[in-house]
Image 1: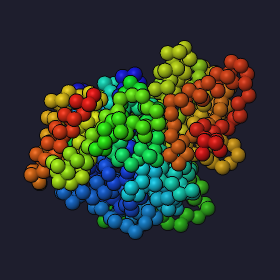
Image 2: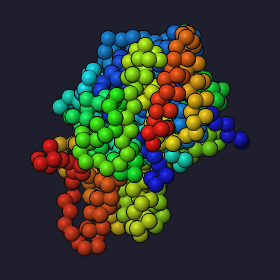
Image 3: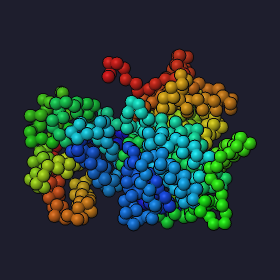
Image 4: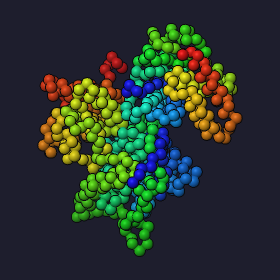
Length: 193
Length: 400
């Protein structure tokens, strides 16, 4: 699976880590890739730690197991750093992307000795600023695309615009806010790489 | 014939719902149960949105779902339902009646473990438990196969030589909830392939009264059961014919099983469902390091293709037979027993090891596959003792 990009998402039930993984699969599919996006279901309840996974490849994807040695990890809820070993198996050549207002230096101490890149993004702040509510998914998705380089920036924004236009056909007023959230997050992540 | 495909991405449940939309069956009685709930949910949306005119019957249990399916199919309506795990268990009595009454119902089973302990994740205990109910059973590796198998189910079930119900199985969550690429067929091609259901005999036919499911005295009941067994035999050629016709339309050829790098394989893993993809990936990696490994991915479990399996395995040195179910019989799982019996009767005397894996959603990885091939090699090359019945992926007390 040398040509396959593997990403693991950590979140809490109800925060949309699964949705983010499915969204990433969606946009990668739109740009011509073979994709996989799937959640791991534990005890399903709001607030419980959950994981979701992505495989993205030029080749057909056949493996149907969870991901133990991801290239990238995305953490949607920083309180998980205290209870879940989020960097377990994570490639030192890869990176971890964490939703937090703190700096990378401030959170590195919680990463159990991980030596690779740490990228922090205030997805909550961006979401509240652009959408008026805490929807960390959208900014996290943009950050993951920026950091992994899984697709070209222009392709990503074009696909997301189409996707939002479709998804929010009945409330077009939220499209601009969502696009802005993507742009802000992408910019922050791009700079941090 | 040129092949038209629509490139899409969707989950296994969405893929089956899409196939149902294209087939537009007459009746769907269903009761929701995880992880198959999305299927009746999506079909209900199609009906509400006017995309199909299927009659949806919201029943109060799976026992009623299968009872209603029997009634509507007997009345002459093309009928299907969906379920998982305990839902299939609650249908038990009716599963046998559907087959005995020779009703070509299609059931899409999203495999989930049977309790207990209570758990919502995948294994094959539900489907394997229904292995002797007289249903044809076809298993899928991924969303594409779930979709393709579903479309083939109706022409197989409704063929005059068969007239048996068909269970189309896919792995709960692993396939049902994973979004992956898929190639869909145009609506009109699917409709033409499946055709219009024209049962020869049915209840709502004025002037041609029949009885469905009457008491059968001992002078006839045994013959009825034998006739049902003959129908299951006949299903072999029909499954092949339908697969060939499907290949012409889709470009995707199916058989009783897929032979992956089997031609010169010394060591083989025989496996069913989503884990077959993981096994193929591991086999490619093993081949790079010189191990002659292969995979036999079983697609059709009922009728059981014992001769073909024996033929495919006759040049191998050892085979790992993988059961995603515990049979609690002190011997091995259903695939283990049936494959080894088939090998023996066809005089293929190779080493076999039966493995139990992936119970209640336990993950199955390429490392597990490699470990198993390592054990097969140790058995053959170094004469290492390997128990005939093994678990893989079991955690030790320390790991827990």
